[in-house]
Length: 237
Image (cartoon, rainbow, N blue to C red; front, side, top):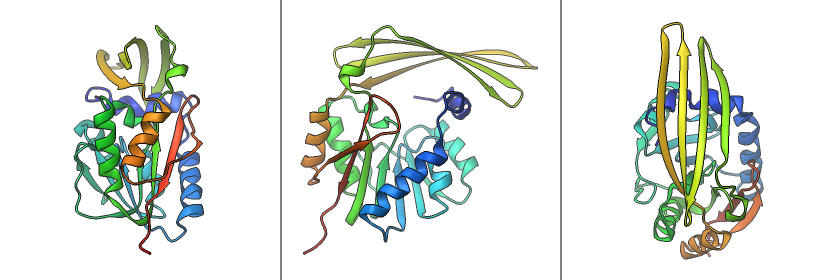
């Protein structure tokens, strides 16, 4: 997970051009078209809370993540917001929400079809009647390019960060090897992390959503090569 690099995460993705404000506006508009009365929002795999920073201005928000280091960053950003450490496969908060989201490809950390069904099922179980589920898929299998090396250079106040990522594919599982150099006036630190994600097919996502009793709709995602799945929970007759 991001146990070592969590404090660097926002600076790295800012350098890559990720615009959380614009993405949050798109999410709000998407929900408004399907449930204009929405007031509560659960963000699963919320990371550092960068989407919630904007969503909390319009909704009563809750965040969940498996990684305690990411939650620590989110807690600093979002004082007073309820944040929980939990696995999205077994999530059980004991309440429902008008919107449940799992963004930026975090669902790719599910290890296989059974885990994907469990994660989507637990998120669907937290939907209020007529609630909206938003799941951002990770990379489509046909978009994968084996052996790609990515270099990112970022600034974070007095710190300078260089991240070099290498990747390889083993079956349907992608292994990402992330090397970080972090330099400031106190010296240079070297961090390495390994991430394993699954290249699920569109059919796998749609099957998991239907298994949860939802009818999936595919809409444009903010990241090229990926899809965003949206589903609305049934309302009582």
